[in-house]
Length: 119
Image (cartoon, rainbow, N blue to C red; front, side, top):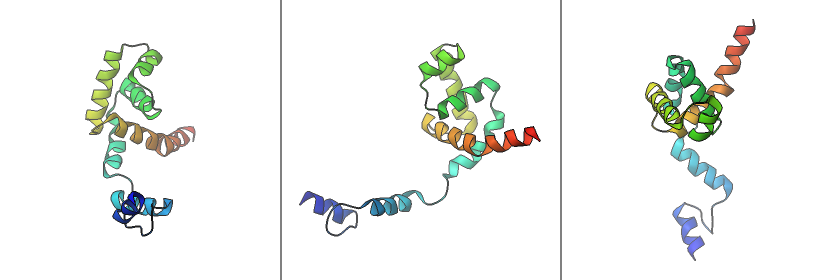
């Protein structure tokens, strides 16, 4: 009975939503394109200092402040300050957003940049 109600609430007759139903629902909520905040943020990456850029890339790899501090040989407090400045300069609301932008950047912009440098 609970499954049937839950399925009906999500617009699925006869039970729990299928993966296709869930995907359609998700796409209706977020759309097909990239998030609005990601494109502007990628353009603002050039405003990061070298150290902020390093922290930004490590956020994209999912590292904690503690792990970043060990890799960069700085205190966690310093890493927190860098993260705060990265979020402000890229006009992002969370380290999750920063991580997503970093992943997008490393998959798209960085390979093109490296290719341009080689030629």
